[in-house]
Picture (cartoon, rainbow, N blue to C red):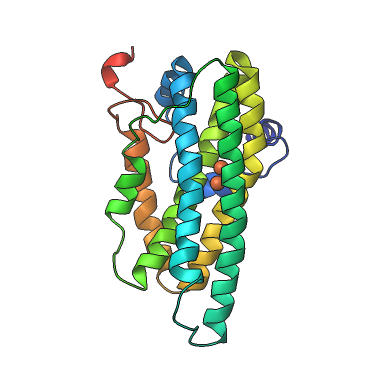
Length: 234
Ligand SMILES: [Fe+2]
Ligand SMILES: [Fe+2]
């Protein structure tokens, strides 16, 4: 335990990511890390797209649940809306800043920004989400927490191998850990505030789905994919 804690503290630049690692059911498979290191340009292109989507998702939550025509029913609902608008507005700004940073990194590597086929990960989580309220809101927030936690864990898992392979990306990912760990907490707190009863069972469901998706082979390596085609590994 002391050695593990030491690794986490030094690797994460004194960011406490224990809550994130304790939340997830599994760590990123070594096979994914090996595949990712062989195609960092694709990883960065997918990462750019994910940062943009994270900003869009936060704005969608504000639009659907914060800035709506129907007046709040009571003080509790008004407080929830205010909290959601504040947290998601800040989060969206931070994600757009991350997007700009990834784009700059891609260009410094002599590559051009281009859209690539996304992983099945986010679609896999959204496929089991409820469509009607109040379940749809709770599920959107829980999915946000799971995606932020997994992203944070991926940055952390890549730190040590990247320090040997590409120190510029390693430094950048170390800088992202703090905000992604906070985003995870923001989403989880909002999910609890939205539904103090059933949210935990939804967390269990989406974490099972997350484990399945990150441990199974995907069609190609992506930032939030499984380890990629099995045939490509020895
Ligand atoms: Fe981000
Ligand atoms: Fe984030």
